[in-house]
Length: 334
Ligand code: BMA
View: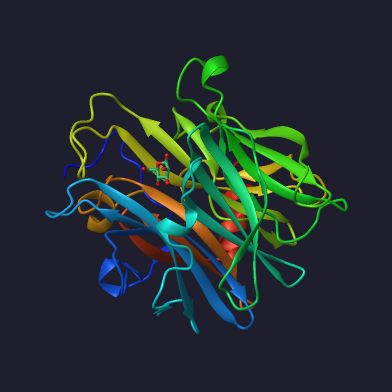
């Protein structure tokens, strides 16, 4: 496919994993078509991944066939052992009110593993937060938001004594259209949320004209909370991409540094995308092409940062960078 205009390129500091995609439907021992938008954390000495598995879109079932949340673990964060059964199956998630959970994000706080997720319900999309047990086989849902909100991610430590999350409310009525921003909220117990503030508006991101929101949960550095965000530009002249008759959006990943004491304040932001769709598995081969959506970011002891991302809503990928280079991207040309 010809490159999308305006042409956006990934930052030179980022390196894609040579074996990308690191997880796709061929690795899954149960019904699977699209494997993407996973959450990843280091927990109990291993890398743990919960991934979104959308079924259907095949010759036998040429439409959406449900979503499982799958579980995989890894010793090196690159090669994964997928559990024989989903962590949460479509059947287990479904109630009269709830259709499915999806887009999981994992954060370890004080040794406990938490998952944020989106919930499709009969009355709108909610953001959910739950605790995963030590055996990685059950989820205790602690809270769900009012509609419409999603893309929640938890900070790995309390800030000012409170649990802190980034989120993306979807105010269609007041904004007049699909145009959303990135917000922050705090809680004493992961259940009751307040202190909500705007962090980043679409108008602040040079490569977005449609929406911005959280991506992977933030990591703590000496200079601030380092965090990716998703940034969407839309162009109605774009035609058919991927499986859909018309897909006019492009999702890139941005990067920003938030103040350690008051993460509603941006210390700096990269003026260009950190990751933009460029490889064939990002631009040509997926379900909704030209989508990059980070869901996991891990800072290793040697300064390497692993950034996991869903590509084209079809496969899960990995890219790496050095933490100092990432911080520099946010602080240079402020
Ligand atoms: C958003 C969410 C994401 C997805 C993206 C691109 O609205 O559904 O899960 O990756 O669209 O399709």
